[in-house]
Image (cartoon, rainbow, N blue to C red):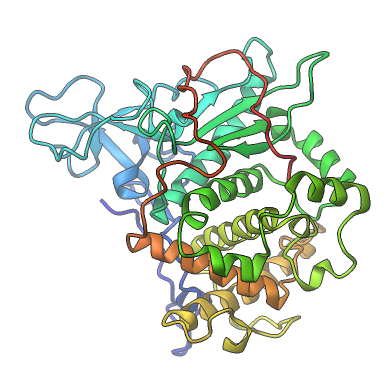
Length: 436
């Protein structure tokens, strides 16, 4: 059963196309629906209207209604997609009843199923999203349960988008060299401050970032226009995919043309950024001031921005949002503004980009009408637009079956240590980079 979508075109629009029709968002619907017809959302595990159980099924790339599996020999507590009770069977993730409240489903393969439908690489009883979490906050500290829930919710949104984009998502159990691992760590009394960062597939997040007041304080201190949990995840995963997709591939020359030479001293570049701030003209070249620190950070910030745009546009398209009649506060972009205007898919990317401009004008006005800060406090310079097209093309090639990852990630000849069980005591992170 495919998740239901809203009709992207208004019923009575005089033949005019809607923004949703023109956005051409690059992934999948975010409008999910229960079997009773009520809308449900990414975090839901039960329909509040009819009490039907719900779960995120990777094969459906969305939250779907579930029913007890009824095939011959069906095991207790297994489910199938509603309306296909004899189809593939699933179990609830073991983290459903923990503070993480995970609503993702775990394959329950049986004889005759496609061999690809299996639990290889998963922590026993856990779904893919939970299996990439290596370390969780210390749950003996009462507040950490809520922080963990917020961290996992943001991570599940990230992982669901990566799957929709057909980007490789592997655990350390299935791929010890290239697999993902997330460490959610807390500051310990007398210990070093936990820094958010990425190193060789291990993404470390300071669990305090899940506390709204703490995150807002840091945002204000660092003079950032925007600071969110999902933004942290999208930024750090950008570093991971640079290692996986750009460094070993023919993309490296184009990367250096647009972002700069990543061989520049990274530590010195960051120190200079924190000591002296960004260049005065950073807004003419980068999507954020932090992106000006080093080509790697420019890539990660622009990558995160692309994921922000894609997911928000997908959601708008899914619900039929129409912003065609908005009065623009900025000009639309043209093919000549792109990195490769002659690319066969350049016009499609341009439609997506300009749809984004229209959409964010509407969203900003809605925020202002509620007395809130701008939903989208950014201005895209043309150089950043060229970088966004580059990232779009890297992802588009991957969706079409791009090159395999390298045998060994850049910067090490050693195999990473094996992943420990998910619920372990907090550890010191492995030399992560400073936070974005």
